[in-house]
Length: 192
Image (cartoon, rainbow, N blue to C red; front, side):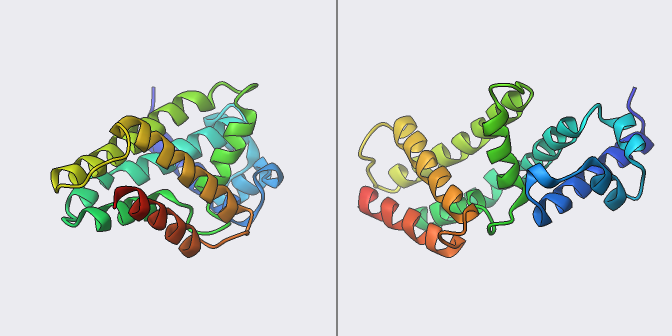
């Protein structure tokens, strides 16, 4: 049964993992480095998580919960439809090429054929992002805008565009500002 102390230790481990991933490639992040950053031994990390992959899965789940915590409310507080969509894009794209959440998602996508534990976390995150972009698009149409296709297919296509731009940010081909510019230019073109 979880205890407050155990929850605190798990939180420390997850935050240490995210900090370590910001500075290293996911493949290079060692359990010992996560443990050291969390102020404990690797065996203590394994007490709370069964493996390094379990730490990584918990880290991405935690980060997505943090991102989703009040995202819908923050977006709804923005009245202008294009400004609301710009805020969504800003929340979705990686901060920079070192963004730990995006680095974990790339790793999760690569491992998904062999590590199915990433799938439920990804599905839940995807559902949240999809609900929020659909809400943004409903705001566009409520204000007289039109979509070139039904909202669900437009939203899915737009999220695919953002995923592709995110990969290019992570590869250091473009920076986040350029990726945001491309995404918004696409939206302006399609939404008129």
